[in-house]
Image (cartoon, rainbow, N blue to C red; front, side, top):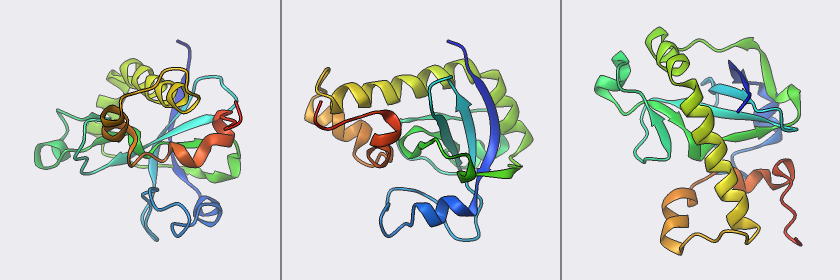
Length: 160
C-alpha cells in the first residue's frame, strides 16, 4: 500500500464547516488544537486521524512507550477520523506533538495506515450492504464513529 503522511492541525475553517451542534461526534474544542495524522492513500480524499490523550476503546492505535501513555491510554483514534477533500480545512501550520509519540507513530506508520484503511473500508462495505457486520459488531466498532458525516467524501451513495 502506497501512502504519504504528515502531522497537521485542522483549520478554523473546519470548525465553521462542521459545527459541533450538527456534528456531535467530532472531538474538537474551541481553543484546543485538533492534532492529526494526515494520511494520503492517493484516493481523492485525505484521512485525518486525531491524536487523543485518553482513548477508552480498541478502535485506535494505542501508544505503548510514550510518557503520556504511561498515565493515560493515548493514541490515534480511528473512530474520530475526518475525511478531507477541501484543503482549506487543514491549517497551514504543522501540529506539535510529543516527540516520543511522533517516534512511535513513525515506527508504526505502515500498521497504522493499514488499520485506518481497513477501518474505513469495512464501514463502506457495511453501509453499502456488501459485507454486513452483526449489529453488535457494528455498534462496537462504529456507534460513535464520525464516518457517517463523510459519506459524500467517501463516495457512499445511499441509493446504491
